[in-house]
Length: 89
Image 1: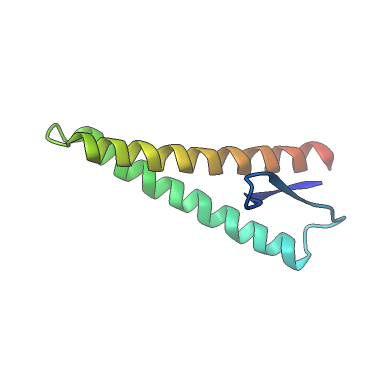
Image 2: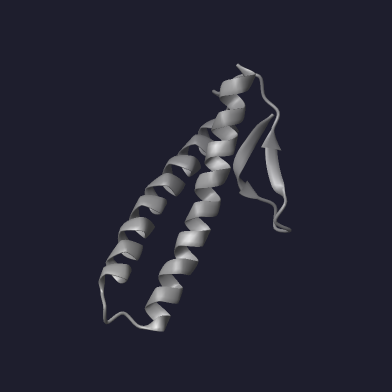
């Protein structure tokens, strides 16, 4: 079972039961994972810029931290999914 990089509207994990990694849904999941990782890199760069700015206000810091937490959640889901696929092969 592959953990997909998105959740249900209720926030529950989604899984794909497929033998190979070349199904359409699996390929969509690969693309979503790549986009999430890319977004995480961009959020990290933005958060570092905010943290380096001694004049950044509370709003900017809160925004950067909120986005960083969202991205970290996505990256952890990708890591767990990929780890599960490595150990199950």
